[in-house]
Amino acid sequence: MELREALGRRRSIRFVKPYKAVEPEKIQMMLEAARIASHWGNVQSLRAVAVFRNSAPQEVLDAIQAPVVGWQIRIAPVVLVWYVETAAVDEQSDRLRELMKAGALGFGPREKVNDALENQLIPIFDGILETMKQPGMNEIDCGQGIAQATLMAYELGLGTCCIGTPYGEQIRENLGIPGTCRVLLLQTVGYPAEDWEAGGQRPRQPFEKLFQMNGYDTPFPRSEEVVDELRKDKMFTRPAPLPDREAELDWVSKALDLDPPGLL
Ligand SMILES: Cc1cc2nc3c(=O)[nH]c(=O)nc-3n(C[C@H](O)[C@H](O)[C@H](O)COP(=O)(O)O)c2cc1C
Image (cartoon, rainbow, N blue to C red; front, top):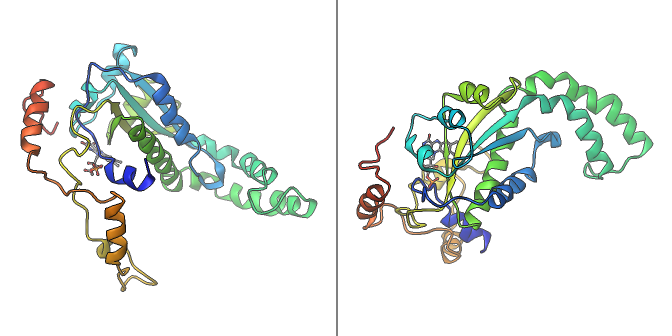
C-alpha cells in the first residue's frame, strides 16, 4: 500500500480482538521500524518492553495501567511500554564517531576533520550532555520511532492505540527498567475488532491555523489542487462520525463485554 493511503487509513484502534494473539514476529517488525528512525546525534534513546498478555507474569500485567480509556490495556494481546533511556546520551560521542566513519556527516574520517570532531564538536556535545537528558529532543525522536512502529503495525493488519499514563514510575519499577529511564507511553496492539475506518477520520484543526509561511502572521496557503490529489490518493477519507458508528460501537462493546466501554 502506498504511504499516502496508509497515512489516511491509520487510526487509533481501541477495540481489538482479545482472543487473537499477536505474533512476536509482527511485534519485532514494529520494533525494527522504530529502530531505524532518525534520532539527534544518532543517540537512539528509544527503548521498549513488549508485554504479551498470554505470557507475562500477572504482576507485570497488573502494573500496566492508565486512567484514560484504560480498559483497552485489559483487552489488548500486547502492550508496548515505550521508554526513553537517558543514559544513551552519555554515549553520544561514540555515536558521532560512528556517524563520521559512516560518511553520514558529509565527510569521511580525514585527519583535519577528525581533529574538529574530537576537539570541537564532541566538547560542545559534552557540555550539553545533562541538558539533553531532560525531556525535549530525545522525546521528539522517540516519537518518530513510535510513529514508524505504528505505520508498520498498520501495514501488518494490526490496530494500535497510544495511551498516556501518570503511573510511569510505578510501571518502570515493576518491569525492572533502570532509573535512568522514563516511561513515555503505552501502546496497545491487537487485531482490530472494529472497521478500519473506526467511525471515520477524526477531527483535525484547520490547516491554516496550524501552519505558517515565512512568519507567524501568514498562514501557509493551502492549495485545493494538492488537497484533491491527496484525496484521490486516499490520504483524506470520510470524516467522523460515520452514520453507522453508534451501531458499531454498541455491537463491538457488547461483543467485548464492555457495555458501556466508559472513559476510564
Ligand atoms: C502520545 C499520545 C497519548 C495518547 N493517550 C491516549 C489515552 O490515554 N487514551 C486514549 O484513549 N487515547 C489516547 N491517545 C489517542 C488519541 O486520543 C488519538 O490519537 C486522537 O484522538 C486522534 O485519533 P486518531 O489517532 O485515530 O487520529 C493518545 C495519542 C497519543 C499520540
